[in-house]
Image 1 (cartoon, rainbow, N blue to C red):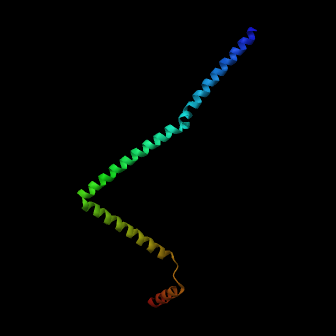
Image 2 (image 1 turned 30 degrees about the vertical axis):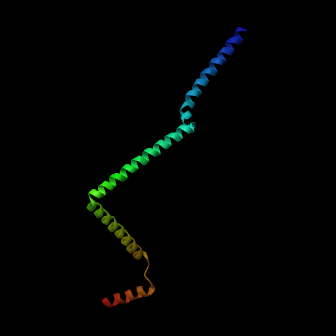
Image 3 (image 1 turned 120 degrees about the vertical axis):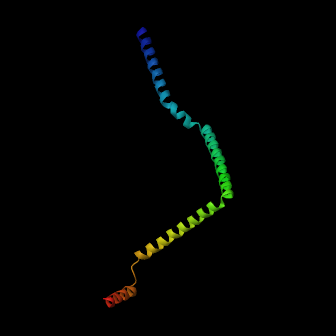
Length: 115
């Protein structure tokens, strides 16, 4: 009977060791399954981001009030850049279209006369 008891004790020890190994492997995942804690962290993060956003908006307002010329210049620069991009895009598209037959024929005739 002692051999059976020793085998049982050996199995119990192996089971305990396996449980400890599995517990150590599963420990990193326990935080992911806690939905309540993760939701609370998300709410805190969103509240912090909102506070930071409000602070940035107030800083921009103060900057606009203190230096309106700089902001007006920046606005004009953005508008000029947008107009340049739109103009370049329109020009590029017009260069990609093949000319109409009549236009092409007129250019050929005008090219022959110039020679």
